[in-house]
Image (cartoon, rainbow, N blue to C red; front, side, top):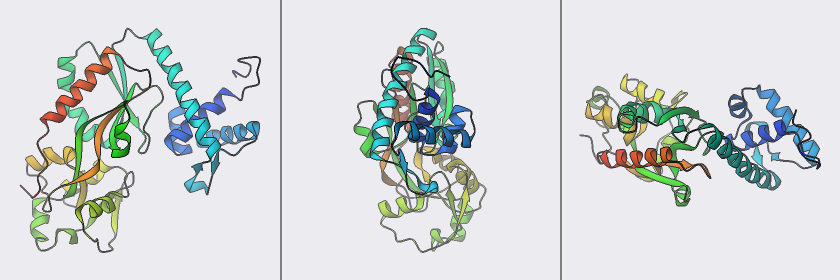
Length: 299
């Protein structure tokens, strides 16, 4: 399919799409989900592309593949090309008021969706469609923008708009905090598989040396936070994601919150500017200004 797009010999477009998605999401399984194909189909397409080009695009063990220099160059070029194609198609299909945004699941559930009625009331003409963003991805095919917690180094990108600084801290129920008043970190430790380094990041910014302890894993950050609300243990939470639970008394932060080297940000796709995206960006910034400051000690 699409094999003879020009007189020059091009690799399969399906293989290029599979490689670009795998390079962007970091995993064949995530690329397969995005493309609605099987994991093995993505792997076969990438191997076929490597054979057609005569170069290795990935290196390392299967569970920790990394792009080769050739793979990095090709991924960057394909990313720009697919972004331009997507922008051209959206321009033809839309009247400018459709907006596709990809969001990390926990940020969507715990912060964005509860606030969307306000956006809908302010911008009723914008048809906002949300899609799930892979945990480590900074772009999503077909989305004009992504919203995620973004490392500080990426915030210098002119396409990035930070709207809330990220403060993190251990959270638990008041009853559990009282039970472990002498040492809140002695409570059972909860963790998220999508953000396994959460405890290590907090320990570094807070200056704590964490004693080795088992961590009960949950698939997403919001699962771990809900487990904390249920009293199962202590979880690391970003202040914007737990502010409502803290205000309602469902959670407390006995050690307060510390500034992390990251922020909640919108990352726009190249060439995706529109009135709808501008309105959404401004709304996010306004919502960020309304976020109360993170407490340094338990309320």
